[in-house]
Image (cartoon, rainbow, N blue to C red; front, side, top):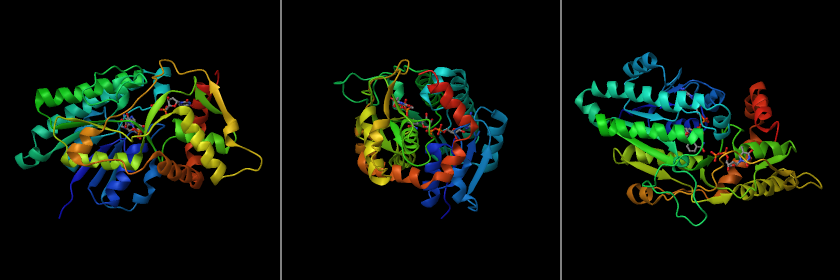
Amino acid sequence: MAIPTFLVTGGAGFIGSNFILLARQNAWAKIINLDKLTYAGNLQNLTSLATDPDYIFVQGDIGDRPLLDQILQKYQPDYIINFAAESHVDRSILTPEIFIQTNVLGTFHLLEASLNYWQNLDPAKQKTFKFLHISTDEVYGSLAPTEPPFTETNLYKPNSPYAASKASSDHFVRAYFATYGLPTLCTNCSNNYGAYQFPEKLIPLMILNAVEQQPLPIYGDGQNIRDWLYVADHCEAIYRVLTDGRIGETYNIGGLNELTNLAVVEKICVLLNELRPCKNFDYGSLITFVRDRAGHDRRYAIDCTKITQELGWQPKENFGSGMVKTVHWYLDNSLWLARVRSGDYKIWLQQNYGDR
Ligand code: NAD
Ligand code: TYD
């Protein structure tokens, strides 16, 4: 039986590449991966697919309308999954404009091209086409300690330029469903962790710093809370929403692991003390408190009752099991890390932490 074709945008990034690897492993679909290859895009993540005839990479921008039209005509995808984004809150504080370019305008151009493509499909294919937009829990803002976790009906209250740009893109996705009938779906997930995450985000940054016995910089008092979702669980959830989700709906995806940042970093230190012991040295001694992030959201938490009840999905990993896999992966992939930590990466560390 023929398998469908997915156009995946941002597939050279952290979550996108995990999704593509899983999709090819399970023969869910043929994959066309459109990625601009910003600092966060890394084709090394996908080298295992180098000889796979059902995987095609195209370098390009989701804001490039002629390129989008060409790709859609040539490959005739059944589904489009939009992972492409600028994704780091700290970068959005320093350079917000690129977040508007890619996350808002890029998504708008992708929606326009998708709408035009969908409207001209033959009726059978038009009926089954879907556009899935990957978003974040950060659009809902910050929770007080006793507030219930975010549901899909929470108001949007973004606090960072990143969250505002993602909120805007979510609204455009919704509007293209309501106004033009484009068959869209949207998922809003919590903080992902696992293999292939760029080491500017909390977990890989702390693992790498610790291994090099560099300070582990925790913002503010370390009591900010995030919910942690293992990336493979997230990818399974995306596939469930894509295949069985109700068109026009939003699904929240969470890992059911609410933890303070300090607890996350302490867990990394405990694991490293076990897996990479150094004589008379405790990795926890590297923990350092630094100036807080501007507008730092205090707490995120996800209520995933909807996806569990409607689609039967729930996370398989708890934080302990997911972290063991993650720390092992970073310890075992020193070549990947050496390549990722190029000159650009060093400049970023200097810009972000230089004066803290
Ligand atoms: P990432 O930064 O690792 O990867 C983003 C990818 O998009 C990169 O490969 C980059 O080259 C590509 N890209 C950027 N601008 C582009 C453009 N204009 N055109 C084409 N490609 C472009 O991000 P990620 O962590 O994999 O996140 C994927 C999606 O999931 C994003 O939409 C993000 O907002 C969302 N999300 C991520 C998390 C998380 O914890 N990582 C949590 C919630 C939501
Ligand atoms: P991050 O991984 O940047 O994800 P997000 O901001 O999207 O949640 O940060 C996760 C949490 O860790 C967040 O509360 C900020 C905090 N943090 C630090 O304390 N130190 C760091 O060096 C980084 C990168 C993040």
